[in-house]
Image 1 (cartoon, rainbow, N blue to C red):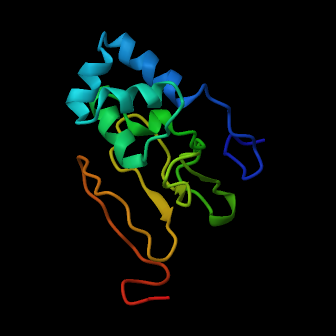
Image 2: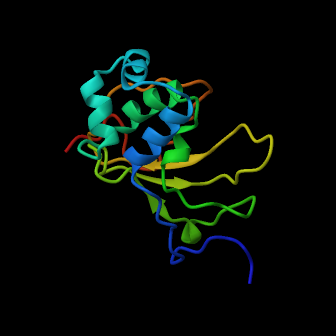
Image 3: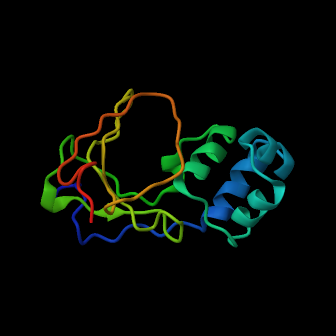
Length: 153
C-alpha cells in the first residue's frame, strides 16, 4: 500500500486551535498583550480565540501566526500529500472549521518536502464571496476555473 492520502482516509484530530495557539505563545514567552499588540487586535479577541469562544478568520489567523513565528498551515488540519503530485479525485477538501470563512474549502495540491517554497492550493469560494484583505510574503497566482467578476446572480 502506498503512503499517499486517500479521500476517505481519516484526517488526524488535532487539539483545539486555541489550545495550540496558547501553547505556541507560551513557548515564545509572549503575553496575550504582546500578541494582541503585534497582530493589531485586542487582548480580548486573542483571549477569546485561545479559549475557543471565537474562531478567527483565516486572515486573522495569518496575522496571529506571524507574531507567533509559525506558518498558518501548522494550525490547519490539512491532509498531508505524500506524493509529489495529486489527482483531482484523490484530494480532500479542508477548511478552518467554525470560522466566518467556513463556506470556503481548500484542496492542497503540492507536496511538502525540505526546501520547498511554492505551496499550491485550490480555493473554492462561493459566488460573490468577499473577505477581509490578507497580506503575506510570497506570490499568488489566481486561475479561475468557473465564473468570474462578470458573473452576477
